[in-house]
Length: 281
Image (cartoon, rainbow, N blue to C red; front, side, top):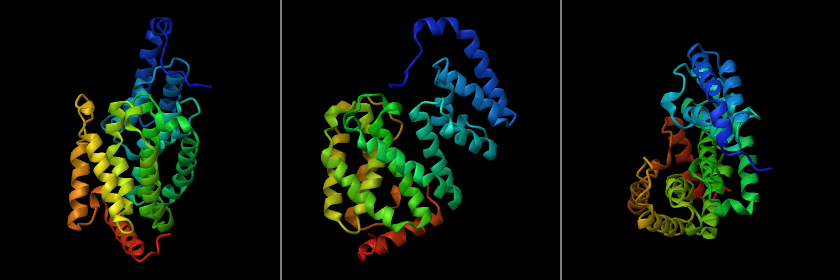
């Protein structure tokens, strides 16, 4: 069954006072470090009232999350596990947790998340409509697929999972060969570019020519006039051009790290060495 994407007009009018009160309750609970109470309000808002703004603000604006680390982690865990939240809410909560694990070096959390993200990726790949999804950025299935795979890249680096890392570059190369960017919303096409480039970059040790051609295709797409109206805050075109320049110069492709820590750099170095010697698979 398709998920409800927004509130009908009658529900917006009749529930305004309730929605505002529950938003205030969630905000107050988070301020007091009570993630469970906040989650109860947020799940009711998004499930019963189809009011998604509060949870999406917490998911997609890091500055809006609690400054207390334990409360923020509990919030993300609750969203990722909450059946009342929408699929993309749960998915991006798991992605955010993955980057928290990568940044903190929490290998136990990384192992906990890896299996669930892999299953989510497999489910998206099994849906042929993923490659031509017309939904907006946050709801777009292809964008979610690539975001999830980029998060898995970082978890595999932390866990020194060379087998998983070795599979990501060829996976991205095959996915790119199947894509027709004109079948996707222009804004979505642009916003997925950097994480796509990160995944493709893992081809560097074994297939640098394939990587060069793939990045050139992404650069050409990102430079098209159809993307000029995008309000994406990141410079995706600049990022891809930088990857190409690093590839040409032989510089380490450290730009692929969304989270840059000594542990992840070491993991990337180990992967480059193993893959260059044909040991990654």
